[in-house]
Image 1: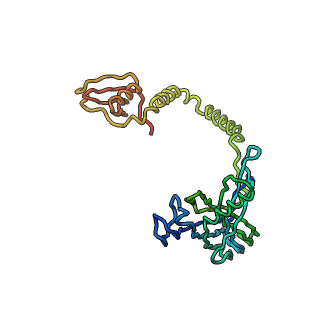
Image 2 (image 1 turned 60 degrees about the vertical axis):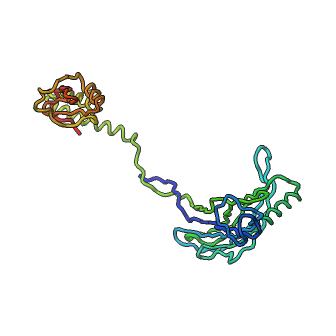
Image 3 (image 1 turned 180 degrees about the horizontal axis):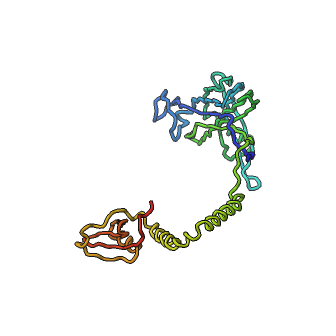
Length: 316
């Protein structure tokens, strides 16, 4: 039997990552001018290092081929938010384009690198100017955004994509901060219906299976009814004894009673459970002697034994 199922198929993956360094350009008590501060510091001081040198790298991985063309736009996006109707909403948003070095183009190789610099003090001033003109004093969120915009064919399919890779820039009165997470990936996928093998549920087989088993039992009873009656009682007794032993098998090892067991003080135990409990209390194991059908354990010269008339060995 076959049925249609939905399967998620990956078309391509977009990768974007940022790296940066912060040059010291102003006199300060911490660093010499010309020092370059690397990534990962918890804060950078505006009085010492108001500018950031940054690179953004983009590439696309597809299952088959990519033939695309487009551009990457770099900007600062400032957003003022407020509460309306019990929900946080965007009240205003402003984009400030940034100049970059190198090509903004994405070619058939589906990869590009953009280098750019930003002056944090100037960005802070521009955002404050917008707030003052709007008479909206609440703080704005500021993001560094690289907007990827391209079109073409990916895996033979026509594709048009606009994707923003954003990182927050937190600016206070004296310092600014950048995030630790600077690498991003996004999968583009589609859902297709595929034909898959389907097996009928067990419930549909229940009635035929029951009829088959019933017929098998009836035929077996007719053919060997007389013989089964002779051994049925012994067989059931054997199964019952094995059932009682099963829960304790992990505590039982196979072995033989000592040949000179008369030298031990002997204590008979009334059940296998009592024997196992006794052995566990003494940190010993129970030994099963298949020849005599006896279970025993020895501790401090005392033989603790439980005799079972069941013939044969315990099944593994």
